[in-house]
Image (cartoon, rainbow, N blue to C red; front, top):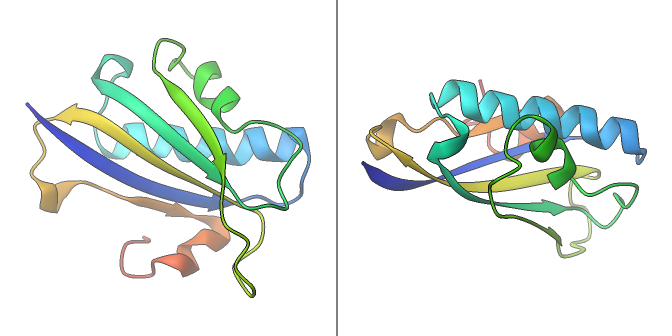
Length: 120
C-alpha cells in the first residue's frame, strides 16, 4: 500500500452547528466511499474552515462517522478577500492501493467552483 493525500471541500449553508456537521459529514462520507477507504486506512485528517465558520469543529463530524481513532485537526483558512465563504476543506492521508491518478478528490456543493477540474 501507498500513502496518498486526498483533498476535498464543501460549502456550508450557514454558520450553525447543524449545518457545519451536516456538510462535513457528507464530505467525509463521500471521500471514504469514492476512494474505497475504511477507517483503519486513514492516517490523519486536517480540516480547515473559512473565518466565517465558528459554530463547531468540523472534526466532530468525522468522529461521528467512525474516524474516532484517527488523529484529526482543525485550523482556520487565511482570510483572503473575495474568497468563497463558508467553506470546510480537508486533506486526508490514507493507505491505499489506488494509483495517484485514480484518487478521487471530492468537491461538493458550492465548493465545486474551487476545483471544477476535479468536481463531479
